[in-house]
Structure formats: C-alpha cells, structure tokens
Image 1 (cartoon, one colour):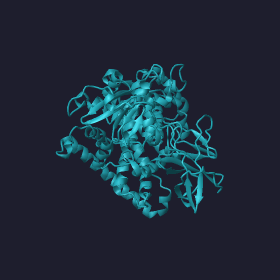
Image 2 (spheres, rainbow, N blue to C red):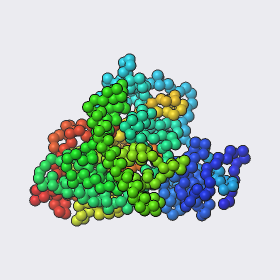
Image 3 (tube, rainbow, N blue to C red):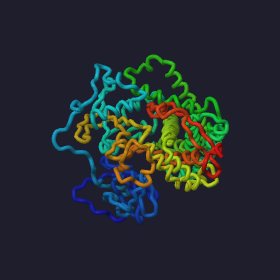
Image 4 (cartoon, rainbow, N blue to C red):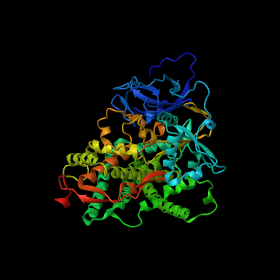
Length: 593
C-alpha cells in the first residue's frame, strides 16, 4: 500500500492490525476521541472523518454501493476514493494513513463544528424558569401524564433555554433546533443519557443498547444496526406482509360485525408480531389471539419506568406497591419467554455451527457475537437487549400509527391521498405485495412524516454532560442534566409554514413558505440515531396502506376527547374508531353501495 504523506510532527495513532480489516468495509475506527471510517478503494485503504457532515451519523454504519459510501441515516453518498459527496456539498475530510509492521496508524483530522463561545458564558443560575419550592423543586407543578406539555408551555413562556428542578436535580431545558442537534451529534463522548436511566433499566433487568454508555455501547449498537439493515429488511418483507394480512383480517371481522376498534391495541399487536419475527424468529401471532397476550405485559413497562425515573423518593426499593409488583411480574413472564427463545436459538447454533457466521435473527447474532475482549455476551446482556428491541419495536411505531389515524380522521385530503395511492399501488391486493411496492407508498410516507412532526411520540430526550461543555452560550458543568424538547422545532413557524395544521402534502411538494426538514428529528440525530428508523417507517407505510385500501375510518367521539398521555412515550388516550369496508376497487364504503 502506498504511504500517504504525513505532516511533520503529527502524532501517529494506532488503529488496528491490517489483518483485522477483511473485505471492502466500511470499518469503524477511533483516534484521539475522533470517529474515523476506513474503506478499501482500488485495493488501497483510505480513511475519512467518521461522522456524516449532515447530522453526524456514524459512517461506519453505512454501506458500500459500487464506488460510493452511503450514509445509513439519510442516504448521503460519498466517493470512496476522494470523500467527495455526490449531488451536493459536504466533502469528507481525509485522514492520512501509514502501515508499520502490519499495523495501521492514522493522524485524525481533528474535531470540527464544536461549540465555542466568545465572551462571557451564561450560567445555569442565569437562566429563567418557573418558581421552585425547597426540596421538591418544580415537581408539584408537573403532571407526569402531561409532563411534555408542561415543559413545552414553559418553553413558550421562558424561551428556548430555561431551567427546571426535578426535585434536587436542576435541569436545563432546550427547544432550539440547532442546540438540540449539536447536543445529539456530540454523543456519546460529550453527552450521555441521564445516568438515572441506566440505573432504572439495570434494576429492571433491561440493560441494553438504549441505556448502555461508553465502551459497552459500541458492540451492542453494531449488532442492532446489522439486524435492522436494509438488506435484512428486504429479505424479511414476506414475513411482514404475512403479519399485515393478519391485521387486515382482524379489521375485516370488526368492520363486518360493526364493532369499535381499539387501534392502539391492534397496532401494538401488529408491531409485537413484526418485532418477534424479525428479532427472534418467533411467531407470536398476537393478532389472531385474544386474552393475556405478550403485548398486555409489555404495556406495563414504559409507565413503570416513567414512575421510577421521575420519582422524588425511590419508594419501590423500600416497599413494593401493587403497581410495582404488577410491573415486575409482567417483566418476569416476558423474560421467561425470551429465555426459552434463547435456549432454542443456542440449540440451533449448536446443531448447525456454520449458522453463527450468517445469523438470521438478532438473537442468533447476539448469541454468536463476542465482546471486545473476545468473550461471549452473558445471558443478562443478551436478554436485556432482546427486551429493549421488543419494547422499542412495539411502542413507538404503534403509537405513531395511532396518531396518524387520529389526524386523518379530520383531514379528508390526506385520506383521499392514502386511498388513491393504495388503490394504485396495491391493485387487487389487500397489503403491499413486496418491498418495492411498499417503497412506492410516498403518500403514506408523507402522512408518517407529518404525524411525526405534530405528534412526536418521543417528545423528550434527557441527557447529561460527561465533562465540562459549552452549548451555544451556555457553560455546562460535568454531570449537568439537559432536557431536549424534540417536538418544539417542528411546531415552530420559523421552520414550517402553518405549523399547527396537519398537511402531509408539504412533504411531497414543499410549500412556498418555511419548510426546514432538518429541524425535524423524530428518530434523534448523530451517532445514536434510532437504529430502527427504517423498520418503523416501513411498518407505518404498510399499515396505513392496508388500512385505507380496504376501510373507511370514523373516529368514535370527538377529537377533543383524545388526549396526549406521556408515559416515557407519548400516546393517545381515548382513541377508538369504527371501520367500514370500501369497495373492492376503492370508492364508497361497501355499506353505502
């Protein structure tokens, strides 16, 4: 390999042994705290800054398509030889490499875009905020069920940066899109999740990629990204189609009997079935069951975590009230199921050792993987990650689908868009036939994007500083807690024209007014962007097309009776609908023909 020129005096940083780099890449590397991505270009190794210039995604999680490195998050494309971006600005900065005795060394390009402030930094004590009481701070003014709304109202009153006290924990609350995006880009080095999140998750046996930090996070993140990679989703699609067909049959029974439909129940069954098939190779088939299904147990978890995260006093460590006993009993039953699935997975791997080199499920990948020390992951780590994937796959997508239907009930233009598109793309089928057909559902994708803007189910992200940091003109001490109001930028007239209106068409043909798509970060941003983003959007497209292809939807009750409820995620309380069959080729409901 030809040696790249090094600047005089630049310190060399060892990356890895050349023999560790098998195939074309991309490979992840880190030097002096800076992320790098290593690639093979015409048999030469090349290295570039490891984060996408767009929103800081880890480029080592991308894929190579011909001579292009494609970012996983938003599909930005870079030439593997030069780092130049195709079809737009944003060239990757190169990192010179050197080989010594079979080992690869680099000089990283150095940090870019880090905040710096001229003049005096504001202190947390300088920020405005609601009046607080001794010991309890502002907790008495915050209804946990509506916490996001309280914090959003205070943002309107006190501005894009204010302080609030969760008991003894003083927290900075930010609603400015640029500051939110910068904080998310600088994870996991500068910021981490609230440390109490890691504690609560560990107590419940839920330790995994969501709550992991530091060196524990990277190998778990890699496994999650591989399990949810686009090629895997493409090969998984026939199973997703089968689940969607079951959902259609369930709705058809309700429509023909004239029954009210609990959409939250049905969508959670749908997403649980999809996740258990994809992640564990297990067909839970909750859609064709009644009674105490898996979803009934899972729905206790997020409210339980929310209680513990924001409790002024950890009473559950002293005495177990009925709600805590129900939570722990439900988790115990879920873990029993996952242990059985893990045992079956290990039996398959033992019977077919070659399977470990080509795992077909997340559980097989976890059981086959090794940590940085070359040791297998413990059962606790595997089960914690498995249940985190199950919870994440079930709750957020199901609630987003509920909000999409709720908004469509008052938006006839959006319904007409979905019906016309479903009739055209699905033809005589009741669900999208294949992965390509699902990809053509641009109208359903626009409805999903507009729903995520107005009714973001993860409206709050809690982080804290790993070290002294500067965010805008704010000086943050190590350990300072920060709450990011993720929905606020999407509701700002600065970023979106007529921001309170539900207008999916703005995502198909951007309006003449403001339309700053980058201000919307429903799946986060930076290195810890949600690994399930593409699966969630695929599920939303398929479910919306399935619903509006065959049924007319009518809300039971009024719009005002449906309330936002926060329980770690934000869902609709009181949403129920009735479904009527549409004609075989679209048009009026069958009951009206």
